[in-house]
Amino acid sequence: MLRVCVFASGRGSNLLSLLQHIEEGLVKAQVVMVISNKSTAGALEIARSHGIPAVHISDTHFASEKEYIERLLSLLKQYDVQLIVLAGYLKMIPAEIVERYRHRIINIHPALLPSFGGKGLYGHHVHQAVLEYGCKVSGATVHLVDVEYDSGAPIIQKCVPVLDDDTPETLAERVLQVEHEILPQAVQLFAENRVVVNGRKVTILSKK
Ligand code: GRF
Image 1: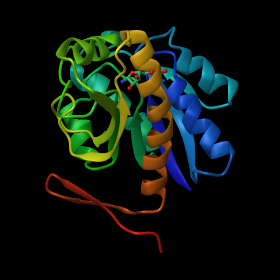
Image 2: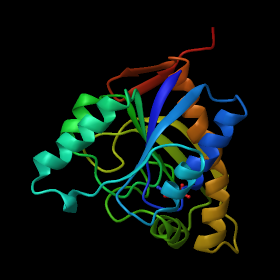
Image 3: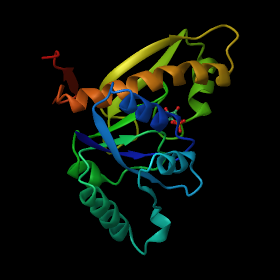
């Protein structure tokens, strides 16, 4: 069973959706640990209520960046993590960890990358920017994590329409429904070993 660690900074609805897909047998993976940089993150509560180790870890707790990275790496090793899922995690993953888990870290972004991604474009800022631009579609992207924000190759993207009377909140809600579908789907693709990375291109092998 694929061993997954979820990193989350917020309420954790993507974590919850992943756990529900696992409970329903739709995703053959196990969330072995949840890490948050925020002690009050709803995601930590969700983890605890599912009996999953929930760890609050922030770089501010450490004397140096090196110690912070060592702690993260030792936790990932201790729990034998095979896939890292960033689900609303607002901190940059240190380059050393990206290297160590190359092609084994994925992120969900609430827009169709490469549009509306990068530093500062998170949460409602994304949906506001999409509306201000006058886009007719938006959507969500699950992508590989690289050392820059939102820059890794897409694995799954799915569109939603933008409606004339949308507010950032109504658009966020529509996009979130899609996030809750494609993030578990992507984890299942890793569980089935169907993700092949060739430079910037991710190919999904057909089901055996
Ligand atoms: C989601 O919109 C995700 O795409 C973004 O942050 C939000 C997290 O929501 N990166 P939740 O904490 O999973 O409910």
